[in-house]
Amino acid sequence: MKVLVFTHHLEIGGSQVNAVDLAAATRDIYDHEIVVFATPGPAAALVADRGLRLIEAPKPRAHPSPAMSRALIGAVRREKPDLVHAWDWPQALDAYYAVHLPLHVPLAVSIMSMVVLTSVPQHIPITMGTEELVDEARRRRRGPVELLEPPVDTARDNPTAVDASEFKQQWGLDDSAVTVVVVSRLVKWLKQESLERAIDAIEQLAPEHAARLVIVGDGSAAAELQQRADAVNARLGRNAVILTGALIDPRPAYAAADVTIGMGGSILRGMAFGKPCVVLGEQGFSDVFEPSTAKMFFWQGYYGLGNSDLSPEALTHQLRRLVASPALRAELGRFSLDTIERRYALAPLAADLDALYRTTVDQHVARSVEWTEAARLGARRFAAGALHLTRRARAAAGRGTGS
Image (tube, rainbow, N blue to C red; front, side):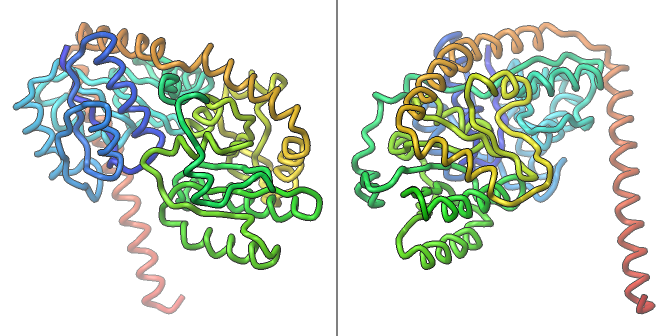
């Protein structure tokens, strides 16, 4: 089977890594021919490293995008794939309107965001990344919904595969402090709040425990986070918070960690290195991954919503438990690694994806159903656009009258 994998702008991010790793696995294990269609970025190096062919896509300003649609139509006509696999709803919309509806190319969609959206047509098979989201999606839509959790390539991400000595030497990570590592996109949406709490928690630990925070990543919030880190470092008189920038290969950072923190696929990679973990979320959420919390994370994913208390006290307490006890770190590190090997290894998840590909290609949906769904989605998007324009007009009128 030939599959065109249509993924995000190739920034360094969890969904991009998931898409590339699973594409390579389905090729290697099931002999599918895979071509990646995406806007170029730093993660294009991952595509090349896995030996996948990349067709460069334009950078869209909105979705659906006329420029993206033209490029996708051209790619599909040249490559003649049996299936298009779109990652997340913007790519799903482009693929639906450009090639699924007019050219009748089978389409499957994987969504790794933490919300169930109704913008993906009802008859299109989708995957969601947590048990809770699959349950909700099945209640809200008629079409197929399957679980596809973030995969971990345990052949590459494991405690014996990487030497961290050069990374530790570069950033001065000696044994004088416990090293807490987070690998994340440094963006305002979803990430910044928890990263700020992590910086503040390291400062709160300082009077009683020597700990440092290493933040690996880049993005629109990097300057603000660096400013916050500089202020903490100045108050403590040492480099307690270090921002390294983005790494194409963050494995040395995971290997150098004594504790990892983060969310989603990033925390799973930390677990694969046998590290104890604290899962971050929004609205003040954080919790240690351990036997008493594992079922919660299996259900809701490695993320959560707190009670809107954005103070760092809860995270400070959780980190204090781990920083203060090498024995607990070792115990929970073993639990992390065992969980990855049992639940998130790449091969069984690639099997799930192969099954989705085969059922999607075999699926037959009446054209009348497809066009009815297209009309429904179009009407909804038109209504949303009209409401947005009305609100802008009212706001402009208000400014014009001085109100």
